[in-house]
Image (cartoon, rainbow, N blue to C red):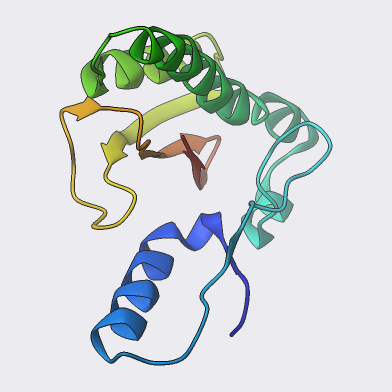
Length: 148
């Protein structure tokens, strides 16, 4: 079956569930999001950014990667007896990093969801999760996510 990138993570979860429910002999493989050298997810929307906005948009991946690093530190704690990291803490980290960029005009949402069901979760354990966000840089709405 087609390799789905993580930018379509909700679609991936749906396709995976359909394949499972219908007992189809198909292997759904989710690949990493294709990114520009500075981390911005490749998207046709990027063409609508001015050069200054395009440069500022790299903060999106920086924010997600910062939260992933926070999760990885917590994961080490989980391996030594800790149990989870709160989704709220991860969302706050993403928002705090995003808010450092003046050209980022609005944060529409930051969410932490279960890898399989894509339902919001309050805690992330060693099985991981997906952090997703939508924000506006200039007049362009950008979306991205990262799998923990």
